[in-house]
Amino acid sequence: MFVKEEAMKVAEVLTEALPYIQKFTNKTVVVKFGGNAMTDTALQNSFARDIVLMKLVGMNPIVVHGGGPQIGQLLEKLDIESRFVDGMRVTDSATMDVVEMVLGASVNKQIVSLINRNGGQAIGITGKDGNLIQAKKLAFRSTSPEMKADEIIDIGHVGEVRSINRSVIDVLVNSDFIPVIAPIGVGEDGASYNINADLVAGKVAEVLQAEKLMLLTNVAGLQDKDGNVLTGLSTERVDELIADGTIYGGMLPKISCALDAVKSGVASAHIVDGRVPHAVLLEIFTDTGVGTLIKRR
Image (spheres, rainbow, N blue to C red):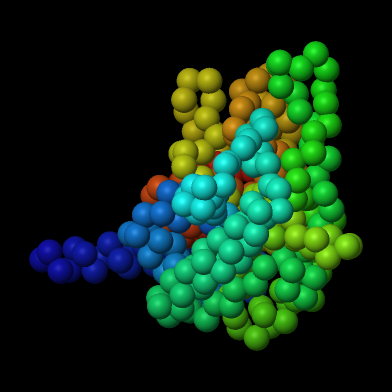
């Protein structure tokens, strides 16, 4: 009886997933991989299996990853001081070398290997490969309360996306590979820039006019002032929540990234609780999901 009940549960899950699989076949989904999902072994493997399954059922997943904690750990080992301004890492030349080692080599290849071990075909690239991410230096304006007025501060090799060369991604996707992108951009002068992974994921999704942008994080999703997770939000509703102060602090940049993507043509954006096993599949293929959905009207 137990075996039959378990089999029935599997059948119910597949039945619930079927219309979503049909709807999203040949659609592009950009997933930003970060937070606990990157550091917990069980979550790493569930994430990799999610990505492989998405590819197997006909979707085109693209992974963009961060690596802040790993960068901090190596800087500490090398006795290089980590400095932050308003939460942004000051990235001098020595720090940028470490960023490239960690993001472009260590973390990127670990994720590629993880996906490949779980049955996928992933290829790792940085934004410097094929000039995938053309960047420019970030003009960072500090709003620290210690300053009498806003001040533009030089925080080194920290950049923002100037443009995305989508032909690089198209080559990989059309060859049935899963791109895994490290958020390192290249300037017109050849200089390397460290770029926030959420922003890179958002811009990639915009350029590809992706079906979904999914940002994995360490919280249940966007919450109201009573702690309830909000979902099924229109862009207009998100603007209202920013205006009334419901969205603030560390969640604001992530929500703003998601909001910009949807306003620029991405069908929907999701703030997903990466602490939940198989969070990506649950958000895409079930009726309930595990995060906050932002969509066009």
